[in-house]
Image (cartoon, rainbow, N blue to C red; front, side):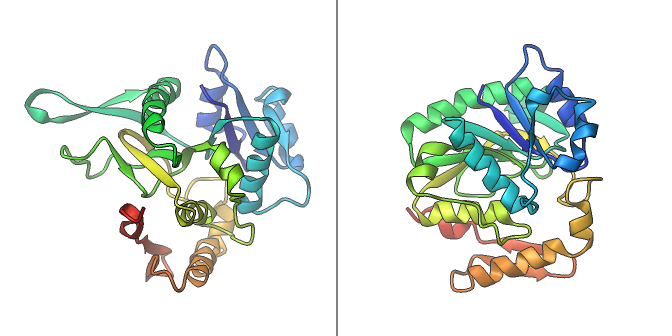
Amino acid sequence: MYPIYIPSIYRHNSEFLINLRDIKPELKYYIIIAKHQYENYAKNFNPSNLVILPDNIIKISEIRQFILDLAIKNKETKIWMSDDDLLNFFNSSYKQKQELELEKVDFKTFITNSEKIIEEIYKTDKSIVQFGFKYTTFALSKNQKSYNINTNIGMIQLLVLDKIIEYDIKYDTSFITLEDTDFTIQLFKHKLKNCQLNNFIFTAPRSGKGKGGLEKEYNQGAKQKGILQFQEKYKNDNIIKIIDLEKGKYKINWLKFKNAF
């Protein structure tokens, strides 16, 4: 399995992180935290799994770029970058009468199975540098393809680092939120692709809704600011449609990139 890098803010008791810690044999993972939160995390995790951020790195976009730089420094080839509050993991399949069935699995099984498929897909198209999963069990279709190209990825992703390094693609550290969506659009603009595995599904609280994390920032309008930042950056590209700014609702025009290259 590829190493897992997880930015975490005020979630030292996260169920996801605790379960990750207790997997045997142990997976290679790093929890990226602020210095003032170290004592709480050290109660639950081995110090070798904790990485303390420099004091000047605060925004989530800055933290994600720090992780990218750290992974490159560690000479990783592929990494998982995940949020710290994922809840459930499912494999989907079709049984009798073509009925869709969801099998709840543990995180290690979820990742191990997905990596096998990712490796097969990557062999056929090395321009795919970002892999992810469906982010809800709602409205699943029995007619869905096994994977989609150039679409929304979600809160856990596998990054192939060689092309990211080659094209010098970085997180835009001016962003308050939507930094991950912006990163994906940057990939597309370099004619690189992402891939969503539709038969692997996870659930998690909606952004800013879980305790800890960026809850405080979201309550102070971070999502709205991020939406406006994104709109301004791509104002000539017809990428985002704001549906209800006050409620933080927007839609990304993924179809624009579906068959673009």
